[in-house]
Length: 242
Image (cartoon, rainbow, N blue to C red; front, side, top):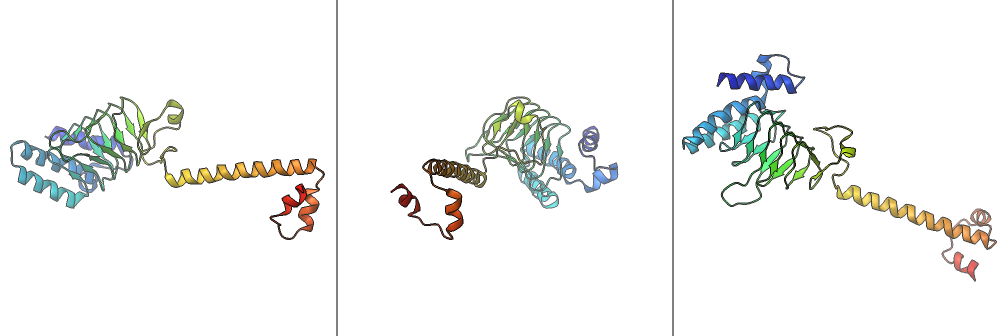
């Protein structure tokens, strides 16, 4: 037990440059508190004291803002940075050296009993606000971008981002993984609509320019007409053609 606690403290220093000393980690890090209390609740869960296990998990959520079901299986050197809003479901399985940022959900997509939450391999990093849903597998060393929604398996060492999450190729990963950054392929409907409007505007401008060029070839002085006309006449082009 004490060895495991020491590993948890060391993992905080290894992954959070803001940590200054052991006293600060032990007293001020909710992720550390949640991990210690989950060990207690998980032990009680395994010996069938399930109400007491759930009650400790409930108190843990009230104290830390982190909800970990006592049935979840968590490996060594697990680190939750900041922690507020993290939810880990009953059948979730987490390997060693995994890092979760705030707002992460390891949730289910079914009300059926049995395995319904994700499995995270060793060394997985899950960015802030990401949602990993269903009995899927996230391979060892994989990285999940912030705000991603993952509903399919992610291979070992891959980086997934977007809604729904897709595997990023090497070109997209060249900028490096950012646990707080928002990927360029988040499929934001507002952004897509704006891009569509911009593309349409460019197309219209190109067509208008082509019409003006054709009118100039017919001998129409476009600049003169613009200068002498205070208001555009919708029938102007028809008059010229006639």
